[in-house]
Image 1 (cartoon, helix red, strand yellow):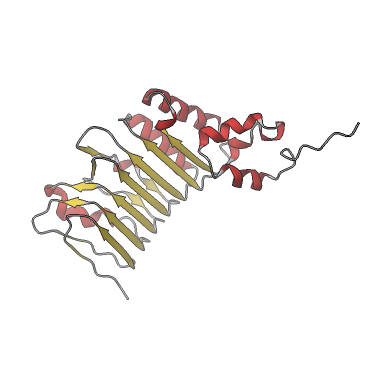
Image 2 (cartoon, helix red, strand yellow):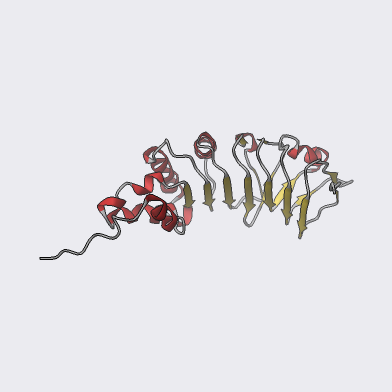
Length: 224
């Protein structure tokens, strides 16, 4: 009796990872039932995509993310991490995700957050990485409050959306990028700076600047 070969089990790791890159991590884990070959493959995918929309509560979401991080193959570096949460999460949870991502040399990160507070200060002190090259930080239905800078030596592309800088920190806003020496592309969308005299950003390597839908006055020296 001829038995058809298991094509799923015969796929290479690179191809399986490519397939799983089109779905979020929760769905990727479910593919482990497809084949014995796929049972643990999700543990070595180089990208993680988490959304609280896929869970019944923010506590369930946090616990699920923590379980994934503990179960993952820790020898595999990360190329991309996307974290989307639509209720308030704890600082400890954010610190866990950030530390794990940076410890595994993440290259690109997207964080989308939303809750019912008008201005929510994001713990920028958690951003300290020598590998991160591309960062997107988005606030939905509220402004992310920024009062300090981050330390991202490799960062080349930065997109901030719905960011709020209070008046007492407006003058220092330019210093936000002082520890990002390789920053080349900066995009500010729907950002609000409350400084009476606006603010100045001066960065020797910045070559691409985009400002959209914001109450911003900026003087940007772009080297030619």
